[in-house]
Image (cartoon, rainbow, N blue to C red; front, side):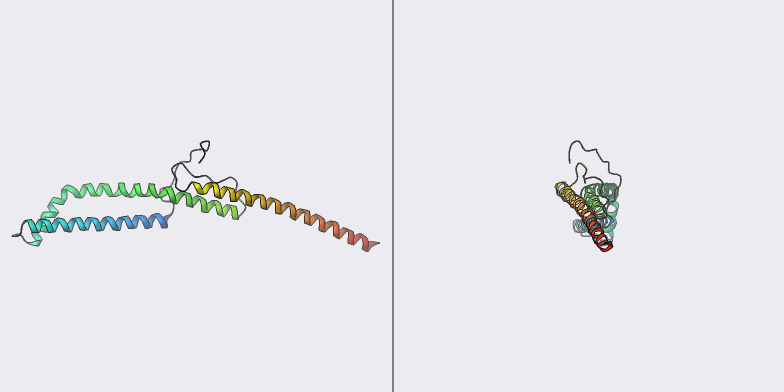
Length: 167
């Protein structure tokens, strides 16, 4: 991105619900699996270190100790989810803007070249897209000029035929 470009602020946290939602879901799944693994290891360790206690007693002992680490885990999870969304915005946002600009280009409504924000991923695609955009716009202009020249030639030719027919 050029240094003279204006700084665009991110206004949305969830840009692409499908992609970012899938990543959040996977993160939640992996976090749950890790937490479950951690809890099972704690129960097993407690049970093995006190062989005379029952499994249920070991379970309740671990639950008593979880008062120390569970609140911290509950505070970390939303921070991780927020950070994950901010990180995924760096690639979901550029593709959202690329798709939107491609649709505008197809609809012949593209007003300005595409630009990504500082810190976005895949900024090298901007130059390639803008090159294709400029070439397409030039071809459309050339096609419009040639189309109008062709129409003028057809009009002149039809006038010649009508003039010849009148004589």
